[in-house]
Length: 80
Image (cartoon, rainbow, N blue to C red; front, side, top):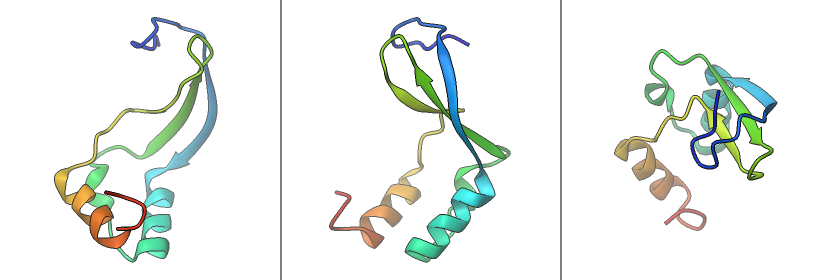
C-alpha cells in the first residue's frame, strides 16, 4: 500500500479494531447507533506513515451527513 499524500510505502500498523467495538464505544459514550456507517467493513486499522508522520484509518471511510448530525447533537461542546 502507498499513502497518497506523500507517496511513501513505509507504513506501520499501530492498532486494529473491529467495527463492532467502535460501534459499542459510541453507544456507551453517546447513546447512539452508528452501525450504518460501516456497511460491510468489519475491521479498521490505524496506520502510521513514516514518510510524513501522519496517522490515518484504513480503510478510509467518510462519515455520512447523518453521522455528523449525530456528533453535532450529542457533542456540541466538542464538535461544530
